[in-house]
Image (tube, rainbow, N blue to C red; front, side, top):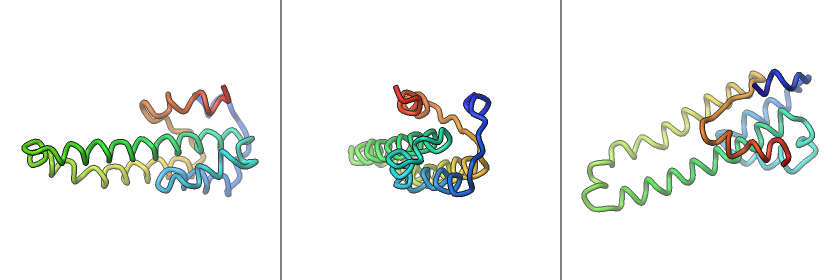
Length: 120
């Protein structure tokens, strides 16, 4: 796993920005476009936070399209209404993990972010 490969001293500031990358995903841009990109922990959470945010926007967009379809929207409305809450819960969960200095693996998102994290 990534945390076993990269044993580095992680600053408190880096942990904070990494944690904020998930619920806000704007700090992710700070992590990947500044000198912080040279710190593996920051680069990892920066790219992953950015891709997580983009995935949440895409899911929200797809959910709004489904909700607009007559018949289907009425049936799925209660489930789709919970989607923003579920997204916030996951983003807070990942933020806590990042703040604790952990590397989290998010299904599908981590796979998309991996080439950018590794710099390929």
